[in-house]
Length: 403
Length: 234
Image (cartoon, rainbow over the protein chains, first blue to last red):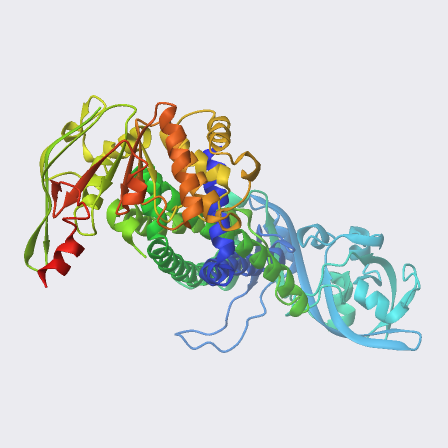
């Protein structure tokens, strides 16, 4: 009852000085808005990177040829990975699936339409390992690989480029002039920036090596590890198998490299975390400045209302009653600033992806909002306390005499 | 009920010691209506501040009700003001942006009492403002504002009503109305102390205490009034 009266008085005091109150709150509004918007942008960037990695699985180890040369002089990439290496890796404990692959650029042609696209030759295990799903048709199978069948699975963008609205399944296209039957179309994954998985053709590795590229070596072997926590142990086991198979003498360096997606992910996450903290702390500083603005206006308000304080004391207000009144006013001011700031921050977070045409994604963080509101209320208490104490300690006779 | 003995209050103003109160004793019985009168600088405001527990004397004793105010710690003086004293000021001193009702409720809230609204409405009825409860001070006339201030002073049922020049900011007719209100409240048994410089106001009271240079003095008659003395000196 009395509490609602205090809040009413505080709100009326604010309304009586609209411009001044708004300017005082502006610091908090901008501060809170900035915290929320910056955290949303930071988290959005992080999520974009995470999505890019998880689209291909985080539990993958990619074995690639090491660099050729001795004594620190590297003279190019070795060609030493074979399909048999891949078969051997299926025996390594912890490895649940293996897919060797070769790749290159090819000319694709259907009737009069043609384009250049990436072509990967691999096994049927490649699809689950790389999280590829089939939109229509089906993937090729082991028999196709054994038979060096001229079949292919194409990405949805390639399908649209060649076929338009027509269904590509069971149609025949030409890859580098050779007829291939389309058996399936991939489900869209979205452009990854450095390459587009939706614009490619996937064919059996046997066909690709022999007929398209004329290779006897594979480019890489991707291994999926059954359990994420075993990834380091499995990596060591793969190195050991490869040394044995390639007869690397003890003391010689490994002749293959292994790329670990999880390591990549950790590094990327750390980078975006730093980015987020940086943005967040800049925003927190503006919140601090906003608090000083509130303190300034509260000091002015206490001076202006000296007489009111005197009257309140004369009719029986204790020091703590006056303290409470001014503290509530300060908290209310920073609280309202905080709420408006949240709205502003969410607004910016929603606007950024639209204004940048989707190249900046944002992710609004509920904990960020809670922290920002809590922080702004804390700013109100912290910066409102000193002016409130000044008001509470006024001498009633002096205060009543104040003109 | 009010027993003030040998009150002493001195100020140092510009290096000079001013004896605002010099051994002043005041006794007021319950139900009395008295005036404290004196020219400006006579110490009547200082006396009022001490009687109203806004200030403490440097010497002497002050017993209000049956409490010795010297024994009350500083932070409890506010509670004493709240329950024992009802202040009425020359310039009304209502809080802006609060309705008449809210102004009157305020002392009850500070006392932590229940039924603030009911009691505030009753106090407003007593001063004849039942139809103005939701007006803010700037929507009321001077006389009405002073009535709200009196209702605020009454609401906690204090031991004494302490009025500082209550008619000073009002025209004479409204001033008379306010003084009749005080008389009426006094006739209902309330103790009223009016601080004034105006002998016409003091005439409404049962007796007056005249202060001159911080001491109780005989009130000036036309024969010994300071202004007349000055003229006869010529």
